[in-house]
Length: 107
Image (cartoon, rainbow, N blue to C red; front, side, top):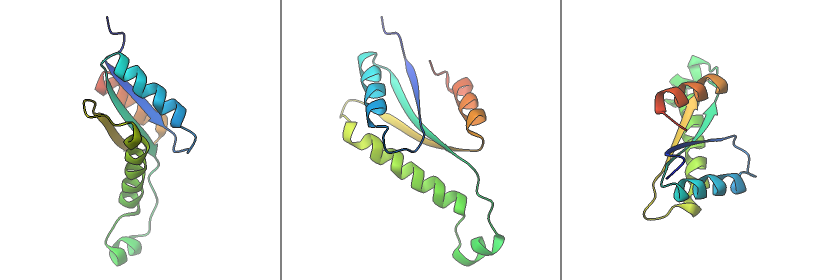
């Protein structure tokens, strides 16, 4: 019997997370579980002039950067028969994580 089916791993953006992500991946593999790796970032208060001048939101830039970092974090551990989902949430970390757990049915 598999104990876990849907695992949520919350990254904090530090570079020393390799051992923790390895453990989450092994846990997901051993239980044939789905693994979702998320990070939570705060909204950036930005001046409208920045958006007008550069045509891109600072929130969007930060989101894309963190998503890229998450994908780079899991890339060495990706296997052909396993999908690891990545997602970046925006807002207060505690609220976003609780909401994701409640909506996603994580173990």
